[in-house]
Amino acid sequence: MEKHNLKSLYLTLAASSAAGYFFLPKANWAGCSLLIAACLLVAFLGRERIEDERVEHLKLKAVKAAFAAAFILVFLYTWLIAMLRREGWREHLLSAYDMIILTMLIALGLFHYWRWQDGKAGPAA
Amino acid sequence: MKNRLKELRAAREWSQGELADKLAVSRQTINAIETEKYDPSLPLALKIGKLFKLPVEEIFEADRT
Image 1: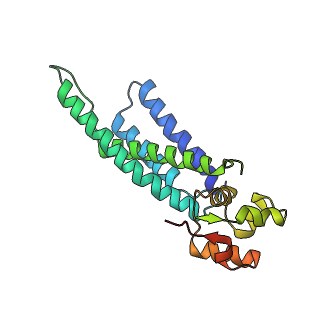
Image 2: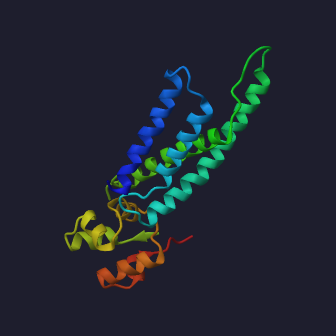
Image 3: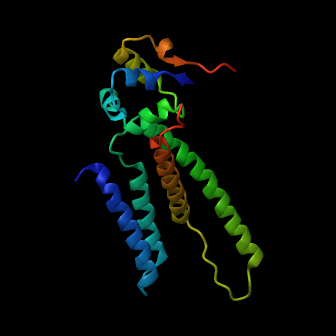
């Protein structure tokens, strides 16, 4: 199996792990989030079918934007949790793996969106 | 940066895919250069110049700011 085809496999594994957490009663988020984070990292950092300079440029741009966006989202989430905290309410505390998952999801989305835009024909001259 | 890549490619009746294969890049990269979304690196620009047998300055023109 070619290296770039493994990306679909890793994304499927990540999605299955997430689904497993929600549907299996004994699943714990610590283990699931580790697997999801690892799969998303490999999917993002893995080789594309044609790994040229534009792909490297877009991946770097995507991860920079994703880091900033993920940081803002985590900050807002933590602030909201502090604001809305109620007695007896058990909130989900974010781990480093959650941050990696969020960053990689945003980075993958941005990279593929920009890559799709690259392939679109420009305005007619 | 403005460029004449589309015009030069059309003159030789090459598709974007064929040009991409000759330059060992993806078709999306060629489209991004032609639509001026992306400026190629120096090695790629020199490769383009060598392929079309033209100096880089005759293919790419810096934007006037």
